[in-house]
Length: 115
Image (cartoon, rainbow, N blue to C red):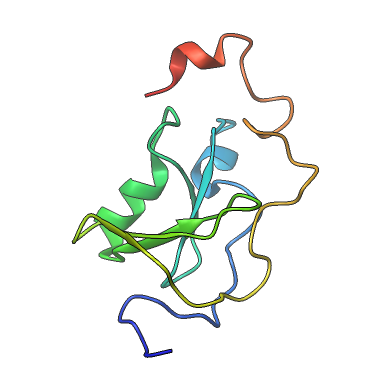
């Protein structure tokens, strides 16, 4: 595959959950992975939308899903989905991690907080 600017297939993910949500005792619906630096952030449906905030503040335009069974890439600059290369493991959050997550942080009325 041709090298794509903004994707480093050798960089591992920053962790198993949204970095900012974990630091603030927050929660997320789905997770996204920056393909340039490995930052794990929460999706735009999540209350805090950290993946998009990371893309804008860092200038890293491409994310991929960090959800089991999902294999897509999104470019914030071009607003397009496309196929990308296989990235460094792990490809998704742990299978025993709930969605939404993390366990113990999700409020009972979580659906009312989604975007």
